[in-house]
Image 1 (tube, rainbow, N blue to C red):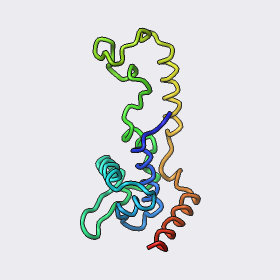
Image 2 (image 1 turned 45 degrees about the vertical axis):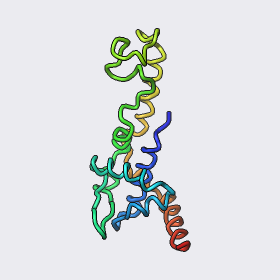
Image 3 (image 1 turned 180 degrees about the horizontal axis):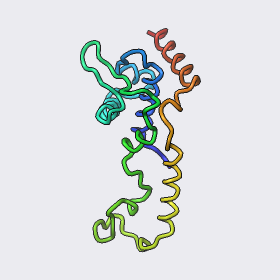
Image 4 (image 1 turned 60 degrees about the vertical axis):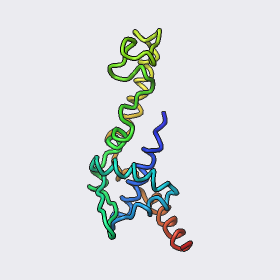
Length: 157
């Protein structure tokens, strides 16, 4: 299973904000620390803000910050927001049938054993994130590495 780059950037942003929860963070700072395109990150930030994971403050002294404590941000909720339904095959999409969508037409569709196996794998994957929060993935390791990266960027300026 593979998560999209959008989800990767969302998690990185949330971790960075969790590590630096004492201040507003300029979007460009997150982009610089991770080496992410600002334009791409804007889309990620917009979605995280709309979904209530982060607060965005506009203006000269604006920035972004977590909208709630890391213990209240579910990793499963973030994935559900950024990935949507996480179907593995087109034929697994709700409401998809031979009649409604020729693109996903499959001779084996009725009673397909592969579809059942893939659905079990998807559910097991999602279960891994169930009950896990942002706080669970903000460890001393992340704090140390991000602090080192911030220092490197300060020294390079």
